[in-house]
Length: 256
Length: 308
Image (cartoon, rainbow over all chains, first blue to last red; front, side, top):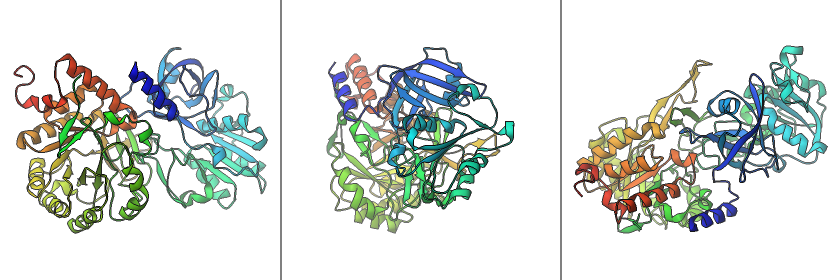
């Protein structure tokens, strides 16, 4: 009993961030390659900032947990939008409702603490990189000047009814091409997606002042200690899980 | 209730669990989550004479029952460490071991001299076995191990531990060289050289191709090395590190002869692992009427439980 009290006290002191919480899979919508899932449990973190991520593992898997951006957090639970390949992600697609997952977090710096609030942004998402941007548009609609969510196929269209997707195999247009049509000088960009997409942005908008990219790497500890996700920036080595995941494009010379 | 206290180097450590160098950083971020009574000591990330930015991404890749890392000893270098990191580390409520690496014995000597006036460390651990920095692994060459150890031990008032590789060189010879030149103990083993190839692109997953495999996948190898070295050196202090992640593997490592058990990969998965393990270990010892964890250390060499 005493242990549990101490545990709860320390959990409160450090915001439960270091403690595995158990959540049940309570809702899921699936396409061929993506899933939109809702996890809920009495201690599952739902008060999350836009841009933060959680680590998730299934059944005490002996591998490292997997990091997921958060689509939304509310009384309903923690909502994720994921690609359904890989060890944990596959479970999201196949496990029965009620299956328990371990969740740790949230981690990472909120987008609002990285971006300038002096301008509006076009949100550019690629694949499951759309997740934190959908969270952003919901939380900060006044900061959104436009949106581009690029996917190769129409596969996830029904999972994301709240937005219009830019589907490559439909009109042959890719996310950065659509962006070029709607971007005007002075408007900022927040992008999250695969590295090739971010590199194209780096080539086209590397000198613009308010361009931010959300980076991905295999996350180890999630709390900034193992340095598995460190990257080189103009400000020195920085950790995607701690100082990131959002970085100003101007600080990432290797992406420009 | 059985005690987990371990007395070594003339000091009592709260438990046999030591956070291995690397995954726990400098312990500062983790300190809010750690129950100080469950951690014997924390080993700092390895510090080198000059700052190192480490290897390019990708630095981590999954493996069945583990991961391969290629961090490359990213660290701020000794001067920045002393100025910016040491003050916070010194305030941690957990004993500290200071991990150091250098490219030559003379550099190691200077590095140990530089940290000589820092308070707050129980021992120095020489990392002679990082698989992620290129060049020959010092720990694979018994002659070099002896040289580095002599250089460090000659400058240090603290006990010197030597961390050695589990997959290259003659480990017992390297241990002997370290102990002969003044090492007070051994840390066995570092992560093992491993490789993964992305079969969807046909290229290696890590930027430096190879990395260090850690996690439950390497546990039986680490256990064999600890057992082998304990048999050869019955009196020396051993920190057994490699894939310990549950009560069973912790007990095996202690029975094989480890005085302390390092947690590395396990800390990345679960920052609460030390207190979970300590709780289970205490119950296990109580159930079998052991008064102290020290009673079971090395028992696998002398007939196990039945003869005691």
